[in-house]
Length: 86
Image (tube, rainbow, N blue to C red; front, side, top):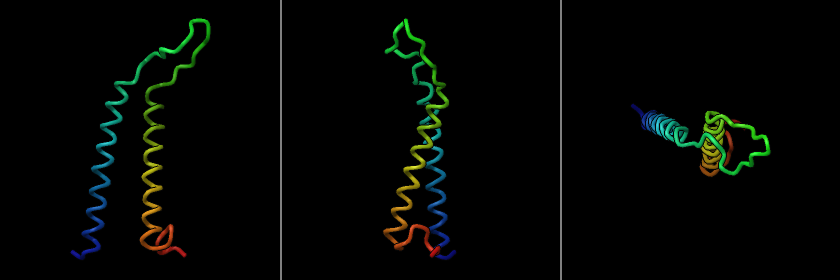
């Protein structure tokens, strides 16, 4: 096994572990999300936001930040946003 393929295997393994951890974390967070809004007034109608949507948007934002960090890392190491693509 070449050093590059070993490095790529470690990166893929690390990413899989991170995704599994974040999925479990968001499942627990979904259980703790309150079903009612304590700041509501009884005279106003309040739209309820499903717990799954809140968790999905949070997960989407965190993966977007992970992608941004990956882009910054690629730029710092190679000088290109997408290495190999000129």
